[in-house]
Figure 1 (cartoon, rainbow, N blue to C red):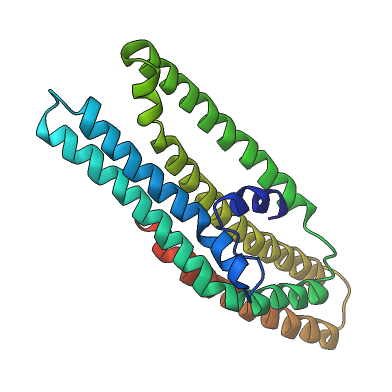
Figure 2 (spheres, rainbow, N blue to C red):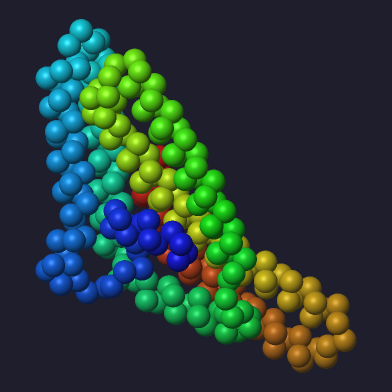
Length: 228
């Protein structure tokens, strides 16, 4: 999760930040939303003034609604992050207890997989954005391309939210896989029945805690991804 947090902080979408925010921190938290809101209004003004003339009415409304809807989705993300940040302490504590039971020191495998996903998605976003901007510039000029390029930012926000959700799912998946591997080894090795029963009780406890983790992930990301 660590590599992704640096990018999430840019848009205040980092769920693992401080729970209690000072007034300055609260302002910094909503600053990206204020800046994006100003950009949306400015872009809409420029489109109406310079670029909507001669376009079909349906195209005008579709573009304007899409721009405000993307901003609405970002605000939903911010509200969810602010609302559920209070519960992240218990969420992280549960993972700590699960890792102690399973004997896991770190999740380098998850981190490496996440880094590869980040690289792939960012390359796709960067290449598609550059190609689209270049096409707009050649066809309609740099000013038109710049005004309509705000959609690239909202597309990046959606990618970050999806990657954040993916990272949480990978954390749960990796621990479930670890439980399955340990159970398989325990039942195939020469262990006593009492030893196997004690391990099963620990694994059941881990599984129930992972169900709580899954429930938390559904609460945090359910509303955020259903509009994508």
